[in-house]
Image 1 (cartoon, one colour):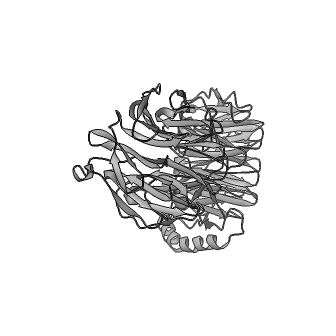
Image 2 (cartoon, helix red, strand yellow):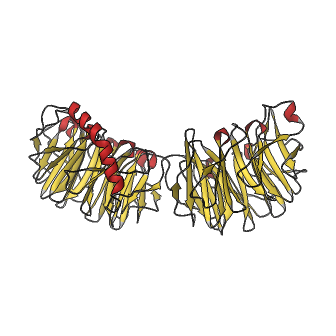
Length: 588
């Protein structure tokens, strides 16, 4: 039996094999588990959304990353490749072209919303908004930046008049809209605020100072509506004379749109305001997270927020959450009763019938959840401080008494028994998921993974601990040598157990007693492993995915994310991998 003693040798082998494994994975496109699709991208705020050519396009990102999502129906969203790492703030559609703008003067264009090209920009200033009107694209941003373009490819910088010569660094423009033959741009000017108008996008003149900082402006039904700090709403028919309206809220308002006879405004704390006339407003909230942008097209309002949050509504009143996550890390996934269930930090629970469309469920706890399983018609999730939750349908969850305050890291079902394991050698069992019993453990090491197969429960954990049991009550400790490696996860399939762990460790056993170390081709930590459709799939840091038919020979697959993957499950012909920042991948 090999032991986990040769760490230095594993590093050398990994360096030699990684490139070959990667190339092999990239070339074998027909094998199951080869092609992975990013269904829910990692945590990035979404700032702008537009519709054109039969497609919704949403853009956003973080200070060092760029996000582009597309959807035909506003429900199922696909991440596209961005040619820049700069955060994007806004997108518009006009003259058969999508134009997106962002940090460092970034300008991207696309005719289909899928393939994007970065264009030369005359500025390095942040571009906050872009619109299209009267045959002209207009982008605005920090330090009073205004850019114009007829074709979206060649851009010219324009000047504000006359104050740009007096205070060139003290104002920013946050939003721009076109209507009634004029462009209107809004934003703060030094210690005051400003509205600028232009008939051609070239010559801009300031209007009377608004009472509050304005973040967004739109045009509809013969009326400009501008929104901003402290719940400010201003309306104007010509862009010159503005009237302050009562919004009924003090929350900052970030964006506005018009569609289907209705103005819709979004802002802080999930604020949604609606109005037929721009004067009388109705308030509602979609949660605690801010909403940054809203648009209307193709019979649908689409609102964007933090953590890839997307809401849709046909009428501005009834809203559905489409990308249902808050950026919380997801640690584990399972499949049962026609449903995928993913769990994670802060009590996060997501469900999906297909791995593509996910819905956030109320867990009733703020404790982090580390594992979930399905058995005997019941979902069971476990986590921090002995937390155990159960559900028949994945939607309504009930907290059960575990009898322990130890963290529970993994749970499985086999032979009519739920088995949960955790810190300090904790082992719990239950026949019904409700009443739990604690059993004597031969180790005080933290236990991280548990699986059932061939009449045997196998538990793995710290310091290379492996425990086995026929009944879940009486446990035997198996020694793998002296190396104190963390073993993270275990699964059973095709007649063998497969264990993964620290530093690229992969072990296999047919009986749970004799274990053989296999070559993974990597020295990074492996966090999760599962079996389905004749294939073992292991996931790890940096979004790396390994697959194997026999548990012995492993191939690295091309991954659409660099986010660390923590767990993987198989069901209904689909593998689902979950990870850091709420990332979700699927593969047939």
